Image 1 (tube, rainbow, N blue to C red):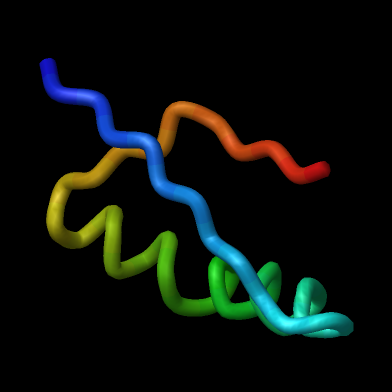
Image 2 (spheres, one colour):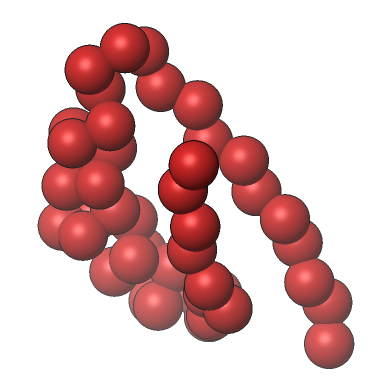
Length: 43
């Protein structure tokens, strides 16, 4: 099994848009190509 740590940064005030993009697009794409997220965290 391979694990990869990704760090995403956004501009000030951009966090809500980043969360929305993950909920509406990114997770669906990852599911389609077989990427299974282990967990998410934020500061």
